[in-house]
Length: 221
Ligand code: CTP
Ligand code: CA
Image 1 (cartoon, rainbow, N blue to C red):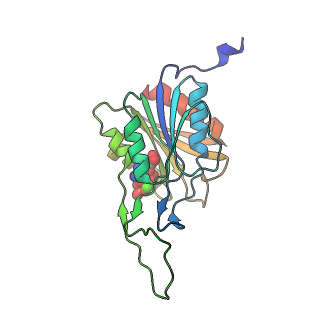
Image 2 (spheres, rainbow, N blue to C red):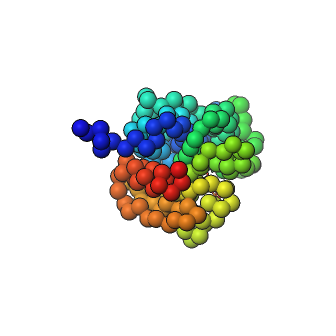
Image 3 (cartoon, rainbow, N blue to C red):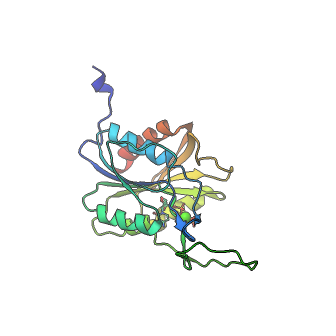
């Protein structure tokens, strides 16, 4: 039967995934965000479900379709994503941080639309909390996979992130080629763990997701 070919290696596993772009309000009509589409994250959600996992998906702004089989929790800002992740992390076996989280929020965000007055407008940006690093610091921490979006010295920087954040694996996404990896249907990444450095050559995000999980299960589970 076909079932013998279905990979059910995540059966019984609970997976929490963040994906998409967070949005930081400037005022009720403007915001700061990024080019993330959520496509890579959704490919991982779909692959985890196919492999038998029970998935919670905490998502920001996305241009892709949610999987109705996951527990889908919407958020807008990085602070909201942080709160929802912490609310749902207990009992999770695997945490995948695929979201493009805004590193800053607008300190002087306004409740009313800002009117132009011919003068300069100065926005003060304060750092957001690092969700992945905070999950990695938990006493009962799930196995953690992070992503690293880099434009230069990519391998060195990704390795540093793996170490500094204390996660089990980092998926390096070279985003130097404008928009490559963002809002497109294909991706090329490098899977990095303490003992492994494995390139996943350019292919559909669906196939990249399966490959990431295959390596992850072998190396980290
Ligand atoms: N991440 C997170 N919370 C943040 C920022 C990032 O959980 N506030 C996660 C991302 O989801 C990703 C990983 O951390 O899995 C790396 O994100 P990235 O933006 O590449 O790195 P940063 O640590 O934010 O550092 P920088 O942007 O300065 O390179
Ligand atoms: Ca960042």
